[in-house]
Image (cartoon, rainbow, N blue to C red; front, side, top):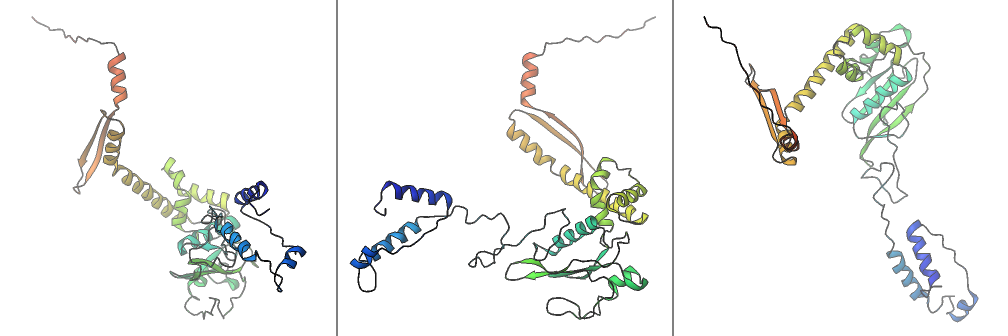
Length: 329
């Protein structure tokens, strides 16, 4: 079979397509008898060399492609450890999930709070680590006191846990940077809540409210904060204050205005691109100067070359005569 016949060629073709092979070795009495005392045949070296050349010819075209993200510094010699990523907006957190940054982890925590309805808070934060605990404080203490008052008195252990165990719900998530992976990983995840959701969420602040209602405010800038309160409670089961919704609406309007400013600032680039893609077209942009001395958009005129040619070729000429009556004595 190894002499290059058709069956061997078909085997090689199938191996290239499937990128996998199962090889079974059997002892051949005739080859053992013709070999030396150690049981090796006289053609053993040549067969091994041929096998090396065959294996060298196989190239995995998708060796740099993974369905799941593999960090650039991860050790793939042991089969390639793969880290599960958190799908944006899913609200699902698991032990070992990987994130590119702490802000990305915080966004996932907000999604978790909105989906689950539990009140959680950030008890530790930094550029390389972050910790989330239950925001429902036992003993009737205020939420803000529980969020900030204990942060300066905890004694972290090696994995970021606190030696002083909090009374009440033991829910906890700890995420920190992992050098071997080159990413931020969830290293501790105590998923079970022993508390009852109180309807509040310390991670849902005015900035989050602005993002949640951004598209609605873009469609209806007159949306009232009271309506925003009702929709938050109806959709996410989150109780928010009137002041939070008012500040959230203000930030959403600022975000929309910033988007408009960025788009209008590129109108001249748009003009260049239109004239480049549509030769013989006409485009004029009128601007004014505001009280700060900045150039502000005023008006725009666009006439594409195709419209020009069609108008000239197919429109009938029209002569208009304008007259007026003169009153004389």
